[in-house]
Amino acid sequence: MSGWDVTHNVSYTDFFLVGFPGLQEARSLLILPFSCIYLVILSANALVIYTVVAQKSLHQPMYALIALLLTVNLCAATAVVPAMLFSFSTRYYRISLSCCLIQMFSIYFLIVFDCNILLVMALDRYIAICYPLRYPEIVTGQMLTGLVGLAATRSTCIVAPVVVLASRVHFCRSNIIRHFTCEHMALMKLSCGDISLNKTVGLAVRVFNRILDMLLLGTSYTRIIHAAFRISSSGARSKALNTCGSHLLVIFTVYTSTLSSSIVYRVARASSQDVHNLLSAFYLLLPCLVNPVIYGARTKEIRQHLVKIFQRAGPRATSEKNPSLPPERELPS
Image 1: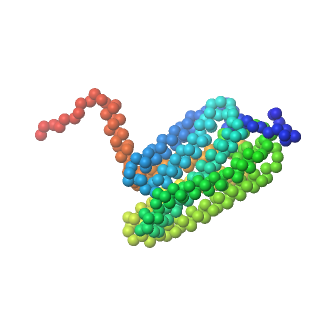
Image 2: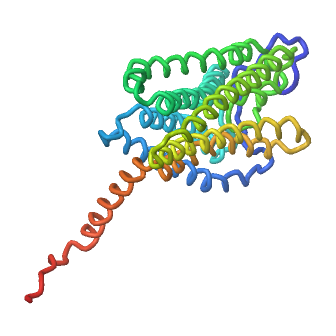
Image 3: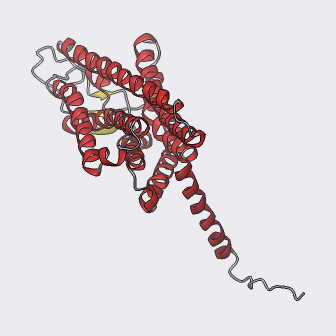
């Protein structure tokens, strides 16, 4: 069953993921850089999440949404990188069709859920800046839970049709996926039937979702910035603009990486598969790497608590390193 089964009666149910196939034996050289990136993603996101959870002063809707966004980043990176590293350390990574579809759903769900959380954050900032006096009574824990549930439901409805259609395709060209994950188009290249519906639905869902999201985000932040400039207090105005600036940087990172990957994938068709795979890794991992840095460095309240954590860890590490030093004594005057 190495070629195309002309009868279309047999379909592969097991596949081999081969990330960066052009590198062949040199794939093992990618283990160290991607391992370092993964460790930085884990530590940076976990540190900011811990700060938000541990500090009672940060138990507010905006910080809860930041922690949720970074948790999604952790899950997205974990859904991709460990399997990628395993495929680098061996010649291939074997995966069944059902596991492949589960991985595809998980990755795409987390990517879309990430964007939907950004919409919820935009709504939260809109109410906080445009209706500050009514904010505590409008944005309650119950409302926030409902919005996050709605975001998860929307993400499922967007991703599910693509994965369901993919599950109905016969794969008889080959069982080698030239990608480090079960990416939709990489899997569709192995099909031996008409997949025009899959391509149309996949493209329509992506374009419609991205355009609608950018319209909603653009409208929200235009009104937010307009309202922020009308705040009389310079301190409150600066804080509102700084917070919105952090969110806009994250939005720019997420959507730029996704759109650039989609554009290059369709324009530069003559490029090697390794280039396309590198772009996929770029748009999957860049937000996970950058988001905690943006929120940790630009959000004043989180930054202050992070500084305190590092300051407490510094003297402790010094005392553990030099346990034999006697305590300092004051000199007699």
